[in-house]
Image 1 (cartoon, rainbow, N blue to C red):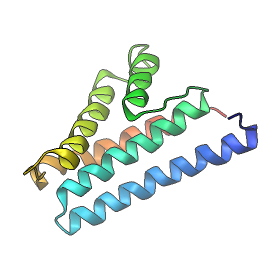
Image 2: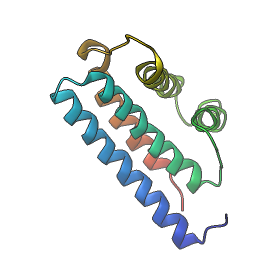
Image 3: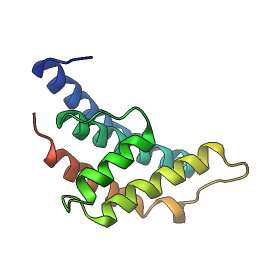
Image 4: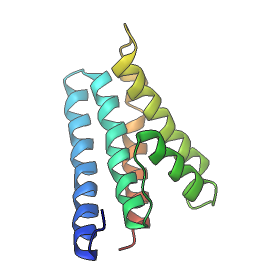
Amino acid sequence: MTLSKEEKRALVTYRMQKAYNTVTEAEDNAKSGHWTLAANRLYYALYYAASALLLSQGFIAHTHAGVIRIIGLEFVVKGILTKEDGRLFSRLFEMRQGGDYDDFLEWTEEDVAPYFEKVVVLIRKLEGLIVI
C-alpha cells in the first residue's frame, strides 16, 4: 500500500495521538489498581509511537517483534536512541507478553509504576525523530 504524503502525515499524527491517549489509559488503569493492564497499555503507547516513527521514515514492520527489531537496528545500534531506550521497549514488550499469556502472572505497582515517566520521555524522543 502506497500512501500519499498527506495520508502518511495523517496516519503518523493519528498514531502519535493514540500513543499519548494510551498513556492516559495506563494511568487510569493504575489508579484502579489494574497494574497488569497498565503495563500492557504502556507497552502499546511505545508501540504506537515507534510505528509512527518507522512509518515516517519509510520502514515497514509487520509484527511487534519487527517494530522492536527495526528500532534496535536503525536507531539504537546507530546511536540515535540509547541502549537503555531499546531495553525499555523490549522490557515492556516482555511484560505485556507475560501479562497477556502467562498463567498466574499479575504485575504489581512496584513492577509497573517506575515505567510511566520513562515511557513518556521515550515517546517524546521518538516523536522528535519523526520526519514527514
